[in-house]
Length: 176
Image 1 (cartoon, rainbow, N blue to C red):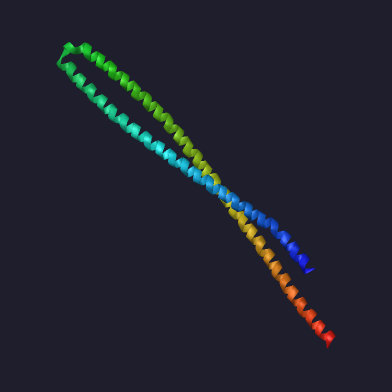
Image 2 (tube, helix red, strand yellow; image 1 turned 30 degrees about the vertical axis):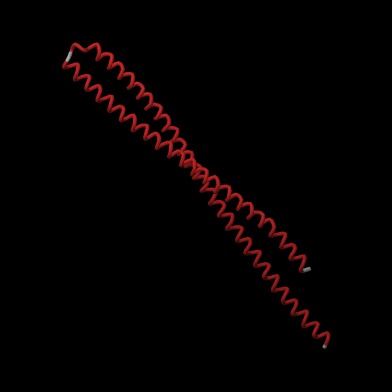
């Protein structure tokens, strides 16, 4: 009878052990996902750093272009005879500024993509945090169930010990 009860208790504990094992695997998977997201964030930061360097280069180029325009304007005031040459130079500079504007547009688009990716990552982190909270709640409930089972096992053990004492007393009375 006692072996049957222990076997039954063992059967009751198997699903709990399997659930705990499953949860450990889920948590390990989530940790790997978080590690992947951290790597993605690191790459995004590197991309942003590269874009900042690009912007700094563009600003430097723009300042250089601005200095050229000022020099050309001064030269045009000093020597009106070089108007044709200055017209060509201004057209050339205008083409460079168009290239700069296109680059700014491209950088703006990249920044938009980065911002959207960061929002997605923030949403993923929020979702993972919520999942983690639910898992913690489930683990607490499983622990409570385990404590109840341990209390039942302890009570059964005490009953078994009490019965063993009673049987011993009865055997002593029979043999006496």
